[in-house]
Image (cartoon, rainbow, N blue to C red; front, side):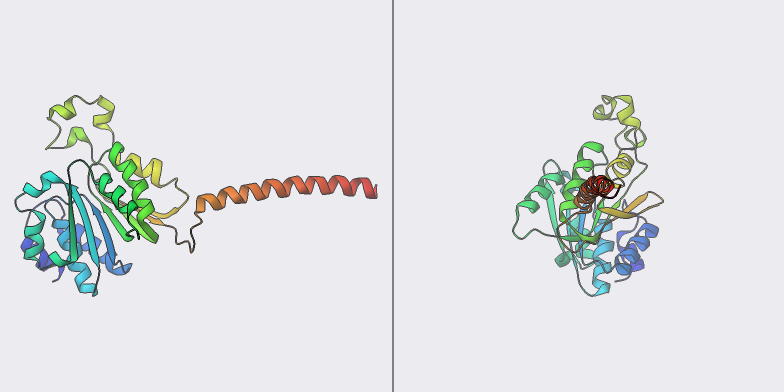
Amino acid sequence: MNTDEVKEIVGDIPNMTLKQAESLTSFIKKHQVMNILELGFGHGVSTSYMAAALSRNGDGSIITIDKEEARQRKPNIETLLNRVNESDRVTVYYEPTSYTWRLMKFLEQEPRPSFGLCYLDGAHNWFVDGFAFYLVHLLLKPGGWIIFDDLDWTYDQSPGLKNSAFVKDMPDDERETLQVKKVYELLVKPHPDYCNFKVEGDWAYAQKRNTTDDTSAERNIVVEKIIQKEYYGLGQFLEKVAGKLFK
């Protein structure tokens, strides 16, 4: 099923546009993504597009997680996946509190699941998604990608949340801050294990470095600095010895 055919089925159900779907499915094909982790699925529109893309590519699977309340959406994710005939490709988890709890359970599994792409369109706040990034990092394959949706989203501009008591009780700066962008700028981009940063519209991309072993770029940097320091100290010592021997 191509993207236009999926669009005919999902119609105007939020929250992924046809343009976004075309961009995401092209990305999946270009990078030969096979295993996808989705954090926040809503009605399952994005899941349906991605599942159809994997089907066109020949193989692949999706694990997707959202809060329990998403089960009551009309239509819900199971309904849409059945309509696009891709329910067997997707494992759906509903969590009472947060997808971070399910990610903890993944880390406890042996073997751990691993993913070539994480599409994150969930809590949109620093507290959950900052931690989620760290957990995803542990589950992402070397060379894998993470895409953050709603880079410019704020609580005070959200039609569905801005008038809620929860948001009104927030400090002003918490309501007005682009919290997903803070995660991307302060946690993802400075991380030594990530590269190929790109912002495209409301999406932000980052790729986990394609290391061939368990040694992270961060540890490499630390070791390199230690070696440089020791080498510099040794060099000073040899210079002093040579100066005394040949003066």
